[in-house]
Length: 162
Image (cartoon, rainbow, N blue to C red):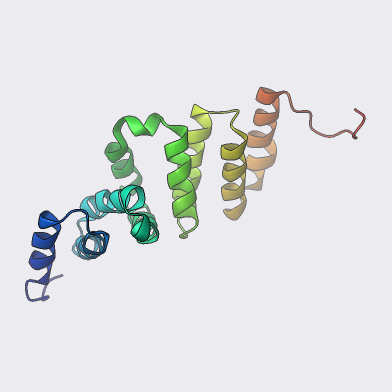
């Protein structure tokens, strides 16, 4: 890209001056994405989602876009560091990007979250929903639901009196 007359540099200077301005951060992330700097865009997307309530939706959209790019998931895991071991954090990100159309990345994030907290009903249900969106019914019926039921002593089938 290019040809913006130095606008990108102006935005970068503004970002370095005031990193608390969500609008400026969102603008920078969009420019970074357009210039092939997906790692920068992903970092800013995470910051918008976690520290800028008024710009969290823009952050979710940016993150979804970044995760659909080659290497996006690896970049996210590297960026999360020890957060990659938090089922709640992974589920939060998964829900955010699923709602913005990045369903396969959401499935991967939910799978990691379920591996960390296999008895967490909310996470398992969200995982099942994401799998359904991808029409991966075999995984739902043959793997996820039976495994959850086994871990939580929930019985499949039977009537109310069983």
